[in-house]
Image 1: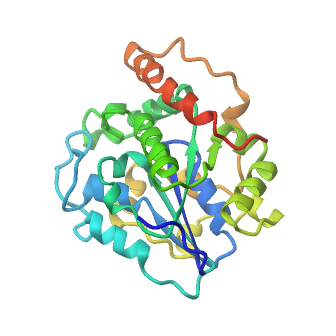
Image 2: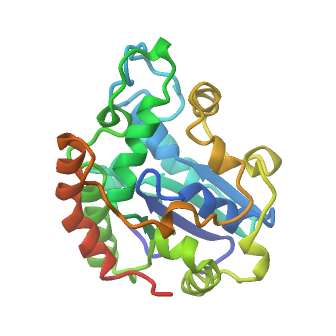
Length: 277
């Protein structure tokens, strides 16, 4: 595994937790148009590709919906040359590459976007409840299933990047991002070597279509049925929203509480390395 190249274009991976405003970060970085965006290509391989790891949620057929998306295919696409681009930006889920670090792309700066599990898991519960009846019963554990419930995998990947690849830690907390977008984005851009301007703080809606992101068709179809990206893709700025509300999960069921409490130690370790406003 090589260190990031300094030759253009800049190549950056953002390894995220579900429901962490990662689509907003992607839209910000790529809003000026001169970017090649890969949206959850590894997650597509893990959930829908020929080497798929996870069962489809609910009673949907457990079939391969993205036949091109092997892990090697994803790596090859990310390592391809994009000489006309200023930046190649991968937004993906850390759990999707767990145990497959040999399929990480060479030449990338690896960054991390995390969020308090007390916000994430209640959001996943609401997402699971929004599935149409045709999907049958869908639990939050079915949407992003992983032994470490996403947070352990994110921490493990962070340790691999910092200890094995010898790259500096670049971590953003989602609540900091929406509360102080100018400060966080400027520091993030400085650390990855990307020019910051105030134009990164607002953007036009639906950049997925406008700028032709690389995103699997089955994800776009799922969004039409479920709408799990609808609000994110329609956003135009870092919305403060619930980041202003106190985190309180006392009223959540025992499964959700157990997930939150299991993930908190990994989140807190990662947070020690975060960019501060």
